[in-house]
Image (cartoon, rainbow over all chains, first blue to last red):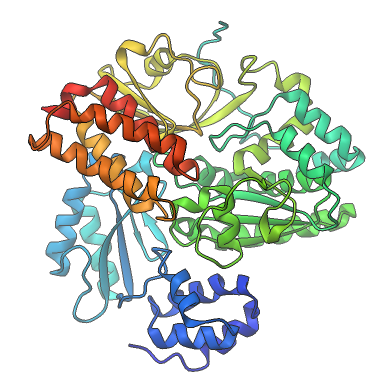
Amino acid sequence: MYQVGNLVKELSDRHGRERESLMPILQDIVQKHNYLTDEAMVEVARELDISAAEVYGTASFYTFLDTQVKGKYVIRVCKTITCSMKGKSDIIHTLEDMLKIKVGETTADKQFSLIETNCIGWCHKAPAILINEMPYTELTPEKVTEIIKNYMQK
Amino acid sequence: MENKGLNKVDLIFEKIDSKEVLMKAFKMSSAEIIQSILDSGLKGRGGAGFPTGLKWKYTAAEKDPVKYIVCNADEGEPGTFKDREILDRVSNKVHGGMAIAGRAIGAKKGIVYLRGEYRYLLPKLMPELDSFHKMIKEIGYDFNIEYCMGSGAYICGEESALFESVEGKRGEPRNKPPYPTVSGVFNKPTSINNVETLVTTMMIINHGAQNFIQYGTKDSRGSKVFSISGDTPTPGIFELELGMTVQQFVNEFGDGDTKAVQVGGASGFCVPRKKFTETIIGFEGTPTGGSMKLFNSSRSMYNVLHNYLDFFTEESCGQCTPCRVGCQQLLKGVEKVKKGEAKSTYLTELMKLADSMKIAAKCGLGQSVGNAFKSIVGNFREEIIY
């Protein structure tokens, strides 16, 4: 759980307080804090003068606007057909073993979340994952182990 | 039927002097630009294939002083990654195409809706957009582009869902009519075009419509960028002249053991080996937004179908019943048949359901689930059952 503080106000000053400002504001909160708390969504609703249900309704529609606790690094493993054919399962097993969590879970230290996602547009370099916004492609269990080790040291 | 075989083309990624092309475009009137796009026969490169010239003509005819040109960069179709590559390598041509479209329809504002999965491109795109704005100011033309980010919803590639998303709402498709040309984003007349379409329009202005129609066939003019993946020794992005057969395509990109090609992604059609020679890739045969997935004989088409249905079940916005329930039932249905919990004749019932979805679903997502379903079940029935 994080404190929203002045963030929502700052973001509203930057993006405006119109309805179309909602997505950029929510996206920026997620960029900074990895997910949206109820408090953050209520604060956004107040700032934009719309109902909190509208904010939640919008946020919950989009898979990248998480409303559940997420770690600092959200690992999204592509599960669509080409990645699936080219060894997605091995990548998942490797990540589950390394992080000691299952798909859909977040590590106890809130550093990593592991989820599956639909096509991320790297089929020619499958299997692929996103860690927050960065794509990593043509993965092997060895390669993904190295990548995660680097993130662990950050 | 004409068949030109497989020819590689270099139009989309060709290096050009954007400023020069834009100066040429700005000397032309709106009607002249639209006429030259109409003459080129260009059809939208996102997959649906609506004639671009007509879209611009209808939007130009609207009287509203505020209009928009929207670039659809919400490339979510499984197996498509060309728009990412285009934005990465030649964003100046995407922005340029938008300015030309703006001139044609009378819009001063452009919006690029970029999928959240491509956010990593922004640090490169923003400075490129700045130099574009500077350049266009030098020419003395008033046009401004903004980027809007998606947040991981396939359905937002549907034009009216995209508008809802830009407006800060849930990405649920609207009823049509009114069409975007009359009432699009912020309820203003809008021309929404795919990334590649916009680049192509710029190249048509550069080279002239007459040169463009040298490529392709009567129904599918020009060339297009294909995203090639699956069981192929050469996965990647290739720009090819339209009008080749699947067989010619497989000869070039297959691994010698290709049993099926999924043309047009999860919402496209599965072409089995026996139909390779008779199927033309284009609007006279099987159209594609660029996604070409090859499957060899080691692959189970049940897994392919299951993966697609799982995809649609998750990505359906849930707004209309035919799509929300239909996707779930198709998925459950094939699982039941596979496990032997339902008779194989149940597949015939599911085929009817897919037909109903085509008629009754509100938008292109639900309407096209049946494409993959029927073509895979129809051609690989045994693999689905046993």
